[in-house]
Image (tube, rainbow, N blue to C red):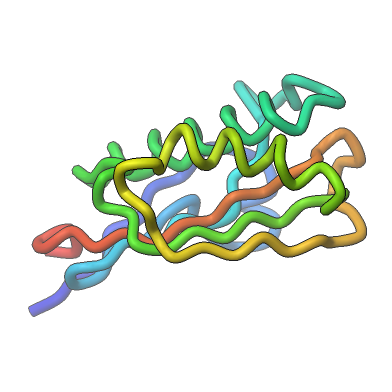
Length: 132
C-alpha cells in the first residue's frame, strides 16, 4: 500500500497557497519549484548562476528529507525570467546533474512572486520505497 509523505520548507507561501515542498508517493518524489531562498530571504540577487545553484541545493534538501538525493532525479524543469541568460542557468544545472542527465526543460516566464527571483527549479525523482 502506498502512503504519501510530505515535507515542508516552512515558507509562508506553502500555507497560504496550500502545497508541500515535496511529496513522495509510491516510487516517486515530486519537488515543487524551488527558488534562491534561504531562511525566507532571497539570496544572490541579480545572479542567475548562483540563484540556480541555490535553487538546486533547495531541491536536494527536500529530496534528502525523503531519503533521496540528486542521483535519483529523472526530470527537472527550470523556469527562468530571461532566457537569453540560459548559459548561466544551464551551467549550474550542468554542474549538479552532469553525471545524472535527467530529462529537462527550460522555459521563460514573465516573473515570479518576488521580482528578485530569476529562476525556479522543480524536480521529479525515482526512489523505490520513498512513498512507503
